[in-house]
Structure formats: structure tokens, C-alpha cells
Length: 107
Length: 119
Image 1: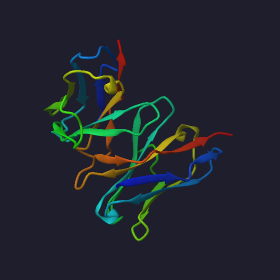
Image 2: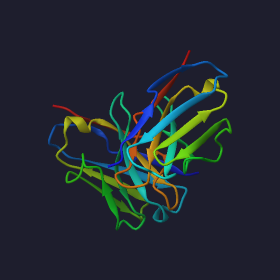
Image 3: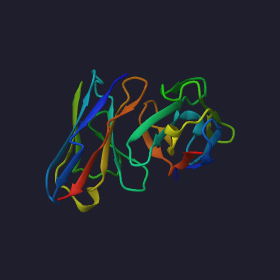
């Protein structure tokens, strides 16, 4: 099974900050990685797939990069609506696995 | 509008059974693989199971293999999860999620249904 490790687990940031979340895989997932945003009491929302492809309707301040065992999610300028928990998910192979999540909090 | 609506959750005793349903609308159901993903209270997301569009291919997490069965009724656009031999650690919010066409990530999610396993 491919283990996904996200860092940091919690991040305190201010509006306007550049935020980077890293997802590390225990073995290569190539670019078969998705990022989701989840707000309290809500279902996850797809942000990015294939490591760097932006889902329709997602603001361009979100971007993804990397491949193999290290993939990052960047928010170029944090907005009030972005305070949430972010999860990566590999779909290179079954079982599908998620990272443990990164909670982005208001500083 | 693409929509997924889960139902069937509730309180069940350890060792009991429950069947979850997910009613899908707004897309050609048979063309898409479907998933169940769960989230224990205060915890992260955990993939549970995936079924192909035809229903022929099924995948399970080790934690539920042999106890849970995923199925679908393509004539009624409904996904199911039969859960047997339930344990306290199965307590979670269970989401139904649609796969992106041809790939194993999820582009549409339902709001979830809560399963509580407790005596």
C-alpha cells in the first residue's frame, strides 16, 4: 500500500500569505494525485487532479506541482474562504489512500 | 445538476448490519465508477470501496474486506454499501463519491450519512 504523508499537519497563516502544503508518498505515484479542500461540516471539494490540473471553477491562486514521491499544493495569496483542511489522495494504485490532512488556520 | 444523496445510516450494535444507499442524478450513472469514503469523528478521510461502472470490478480497503460489500443498481441509479459485522471503529460519516471519468479520484461528493456502532 502507498502511504501518503502530509506536512505540516497544521498551518497558521494570514490573509495574503503564500501557503505551501507538501504530500509525500511512500513510493512513486507519478502524477496520479488529487487535492481536496474540506470545510467543517461539509463534504470534500476537488481542487486539483493529476498533480497540477485545476478543477473547473477553482480559483487560479491554487496550483499543484511535483511528481513521483513529493507533490505540493500552493495557495499564492491566502483568502478568507481558504481557511479549511486540505487532503491529498493518490490514485496510482489500489488501495486508494489519503494524506492525513493539513488544517490551515487563521494566524 | 449532478447530485448524490446518501441514506441508510443510523445507530447499530456491534456485530450488526446496515445497508447504505446513494441515489445519483444528473449524469449517466452507468458510465462512472463510484466510491464510498468515510470519515471518523474528528479524523481524516479514509477510502472504503470502489465499484466500476458495470459493477464487475470491485475494490475494498483491508479494514472492511470480507465484511462490507459494494454494489450498484444501474437501472435505478443507486449505489449501495452492505455493512456486516460492524465494529466500533466503523463509526463514521460515510460519503458517496463519483469518480472522474476514467480516473480514480472523486469529483462529486454527497453530503454523507452517519453510521454509529455502539451498544
